[in-house]
Image 1 (cartoon, rainbow, N blue to C red):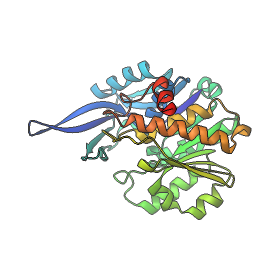
Image 2 (image 1 turned 90 degrees about the horizontal axis):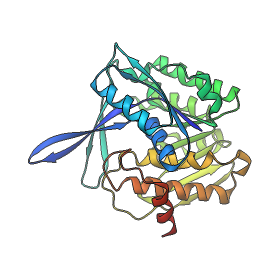
Image 3 (image 1 turned 90 degrees about the vertical axis):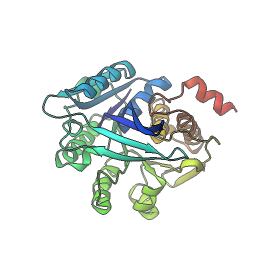
Length: 301
């Protein structure tokens, strides 16, 4: 089982209709998207997070119960649910603006022992790192998970709207990158940290780098490879990276670490590329997730 911990929020995706800008409300949040993707692809997933006791929070709670196998969500009566406004350009690329002032997502509940014991991989989201309490929570969770023999996963998922000081954010991210076993970065994030840092400090980690339309790159213990993705024109890239990473973790859930060979990892990342590419063919991070049969058909060509 893959246990995902962190932000769950509402993506408000803008679109122009009859000269007016309207917003579609969709469930989102990077670690929550991953949990939904893992289940959609056919593995067991769990999610731990926090929402406000409001209209959006109740929507998200019900949505989570329907799309994740096991859910432990705190309903916060003092804070509102986090919102992310998303706007798309003509190529389907998105930009974000967060409504996140003293909102519920960083006030996370403790991870139940039953979920931690059941999990093989514990995946930790990054938005919590914007607050001291979130940093402490993430580091303690990684330490606890390692203490009971779990793999720890971390996605940088840098958001300038949340972390305006890139260098300060990078320092926080390094702490989690070095605490995890599997890490994901975008191409821009990879360049921010530097090839030397990744090659040396993260040598023993499985490093996943998304390259957009160019596919992805992986690095592990001195080995690396770059794999192309499916040649599809995107409609909406929201959640494509999360779908990609859900595909990675879905595949790793079925593999022991001593099976992470070059050939096996190439298969893992070819699958993940297809997950990400197919998700861009419709609007929304979760509603657009492909079924396992669609992914396998796309890989067969």
